[in-house]
Amino acid sequence: MIYNNKEYSEIKKLFNITNFRKSQEEIIRSVLEGKNCLVLMPTGMGKSLCYQFPAMLLEGLTVVLSPLISLMNDQVTALKSLGIDATYINSSLSKSERESRYSNIEKGKYKIIYVSPERFKKDDFLFVISRRKISLLAVDEAHCVSQWGNDFRPEYSKIKEFREILNFPAAILLTATATLRVQDDIIEKAGLAPDEVQIFNEGICRPNLSLYVHEVFDEPGKFAEIYNYIKKAKGTVIVYFNLIGSLERFSYFMDLKKEKYLVYHGKLSGQQKRKAQQKFQSSTVCMLATNAFGLGIDKPDIRMIVHAEIPDSLESYYQEIGRAGRDGKSSDCILMYDQSDLAVQMDFLEWKNPDASFIKKTHTLLKSLGDKLNSFTQEDLQEKLVFRDRSDQRISTVLNLFDRFNVTEGSIETFNLKLVSEIPEEIIADDYINLKRESDKQRLVDMVNYVRTEDCRRACIHNYFGVNVTECGNCDNCGKSID
Ligand SMILES: [Zn+2]
Image (cartoon, rainbow, N blue to C red; front, side, top):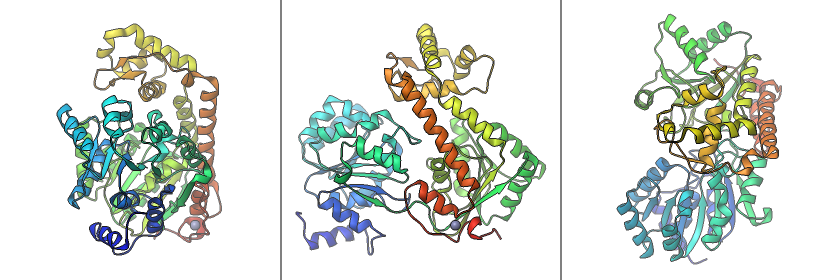
């Protein structure tokens, strides 16, 4: 190790740290010793510091791989405000901005750079990065490498190659949620053996969230109960719906009660979404949303999150309730369970896992449309492929799949979708499709088990994510009730 205690204290001062949280310091010391680490830590608990702090003491450059362009910008702005020499390189930069940052890298500037995984496909980036000594590779949102998780990104699964390109620096892999299966997958995709990685699992369910499941038997009964919860809430509420249809029926119910509310779902225009998000940030009006409402919610005092329908997995559920109580104050998370909602999840499951023939049929259609594709909406494609059932969502799954595997460029929403390659064999292989469908089914089964368990609900979630916990005393099964 090439730092001394004086430097260490100076860096602490730089980041305004008086006391580290939980195992932060242990993680930082491991990274400084050149060990590879997998860090599982809830959002808002100081994950970034685990690589930013060592970056300041390590001799070479720290490269941070991040899938989210907007978050890169925020992180770099925050670092710069502390006087830290950091930058990012992604597709949002103009050519001249990019070139000037490349030349800075070559000149030895920067301690930390954020890059998107696509960058590793660009020769000019590979050239400048090869001129620097890389001390640390940090991989943010590391669960994106795994096809067993919610946010799989194929280009993200090449971490092993990236490590090789960077000449095998120490790696720190960070995520807020990963099941045991996903943890194994992260380590494997990084090209590391299990005994080469130190795992720090900080637990995932914040103790200030109270967990409840409320069983209902029909929609009117459900709506009445949700309404009661909203009236009881001591601050901002989000009600999540799986379907825009049920969201709209509930908003009609709220109209009859003359209640104010906000709405957010995928069918709103960009401007409507921004407006809803802004209003939500600055008021305590109840938000009715689909899971499209998520990224970028940065409101510390959300006091209640109600799920009107069962989510597809505990990963999704955990991610969504994790938006409550960021200020550490007690907050309620209520899942409304109507057994008949499972049928909708089963439909989703089929839509999320179209078979090979449907994928091929979509590809053939895009090909036959050629340039005419630019005037097509998703609904037009839908009509051509599944004219009988308008609720069928397979087309949106296939378009996503094509985008993630670089079969297409551009997007149907912006009328510049373009077919650029054939279908990779791996996505139409029966093995892959069957495994994926079985895995999604199992995740739904685990979600239902959470609903049905008579044991501590927090223990159930922790168990799912491979963390041991004793009874929490803060869920309905532990005797807690909403006052
Ligand atoms: Zn409990």
